[in-house]
View 1: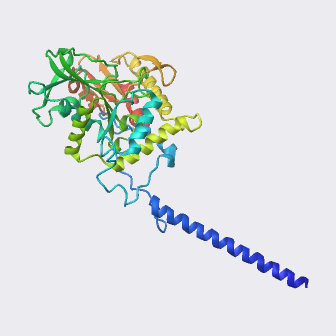
View 2 (view 1 turned 45 degrees about the horizontal axis):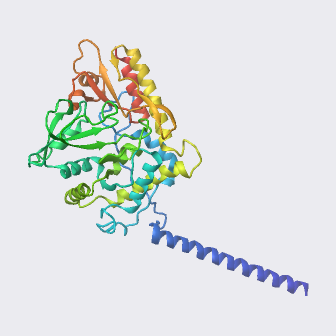
Length: 424
């Protein structure tokens, strides 16, 4: 009798184990199906990763260190630490249509991207978003061109003069004149402009020298485009929520994702915004949805790091970048002071409404001037010493000054500092 009861109990236990195992297997299969169906999950061990682009070669002590471009590779360490929180998988069947949201103001803006951009500005407090149309472009350069198109020509039908105070961003003249447009033309330094009609480009903090800019020209029919690519807490104190007619921003300068090639504009006037959309439509038939989805995930990770995560630099992009930039500027200023032949603009500081304290500005570029006798072409002098920079004439000023990127890898920055220290 006892043997039969023991045997029956064993059978019942085995049956329960079998049912549990069957349920577990079915749940696992269901999870795999859902992942493949809705999240683009892999089959038979395939990885949802892409082959990384090569980018620039690693820097060694003997390399030519290229600091001509503002390639923001210093952010890589932060994003590697964030891991999956900024990762997105796009299945092959998604984002196939030209259209993003036909009910929105701009048909190719992804709603998730717009939502995260507005959330980010509210978090940082660097721009007003209420009452503004949000447009997306392939980097802020395309949006700059769209704004020129929307604001031109002058009322008399003549090309609009486009100006900016020297030193101005080196790409402004070439981008403005690239198409030899009859709508607008580059007219040089805003400080010397004498006319009634123009479009002034206000870059603040300014590229290349980091200065804070306001409108310069008092033209009777003047219009302005505010380039706020670097108006973020890692580079300058946030002193106000800007509320100008046209404001340009870019993912690359905010988070370091230059390869995503995405920027956005906040535009107050509906007619101007519609004209900019028409330019973007004719120019590239909208903007990559894949880039927008990735950028939305990245910006979400930035905002979540402040609003939802523990207070740690590992989660907070602007704190990480501000510390990194402050360390680099401290090293560069000490090296320049010891050299006896170089100088930099004076350090600026102010009360930052984001940090809620007085902070020093840490511009993305060093505006380096040389006082060494016999050195008239600083770009050429540094090139001879294996340092690639961008010379003053490209910014509308003299040859004894250069722009140096402060955004490259730690290895490149270390080599740069050591070489500047060796120059006497």
